[in-house]
Image (cartoon, rainbow, N blue to C red; front, side):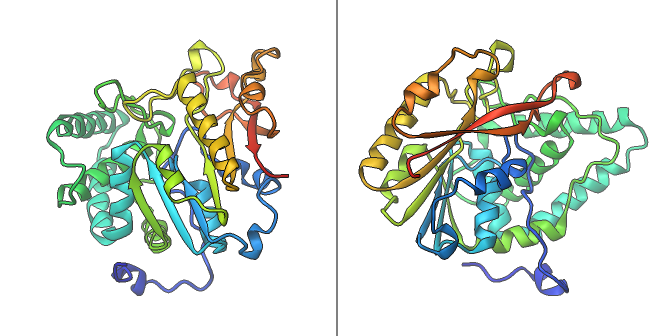
Length: 319
């Protein structure tokens, strides 16, 4: 475990400050936490579980919620997106240096007088970010990790709708978001996030790796890329690897394997019946388990008039 942040030591917090996800993320669970809480396992708040596992980390809203509650002794976090894992590891271990770089980027961005100039700066950072990808070492920590993590946060906070989307070559391709005054460097929240991440083991890997760590006193939360509701909403490109129906099936098979071992789990996904009342893909895939529908606001849609209440699924193997 690293030493507490120097910045953290210098801040005087009069009261506990809720820690928020430091990245925007398509399908983030912040808005659904209250509804999801009703479907968490019985005894979770009584510390009946030892280990929390989240194999699709993304923005981490559920992890941040349960970790602040201190419901578990151990936390294991995975994602296949190497940019994301680099960023989380930098926030965990190098938060002071990250904030310094991020503030420099924020200052350069805010100093631009017009939205056009800010847009030009955004695209320069994006181009530099993509150009370095082919030679970037994602496996071994180096000083370049800090700059890259700062770029990830900057691009995420200033791009269209806060998406993280890459093409098949792994290049970030989301356009400028045209926000008037986006929060780029929230130093207080980053420091608190760093402190919370000291509890967690952060790994890059396939979701199936979690079975090596899952025990009967574990709770596993799966939040995979959502199954598209239609052809125009096909957004699963958080990493170069697509997550199609074959991957959804592979995840369901893993859930059945964990269930046979007495491991409790929860899965989130889109509800195909939002657009096709006869689409029972998940009912069939998770037959024998519990399926609940939650109300969610559609967060990602280019047409603002099409953003509204939709149903999302929560599936569990416990009552």
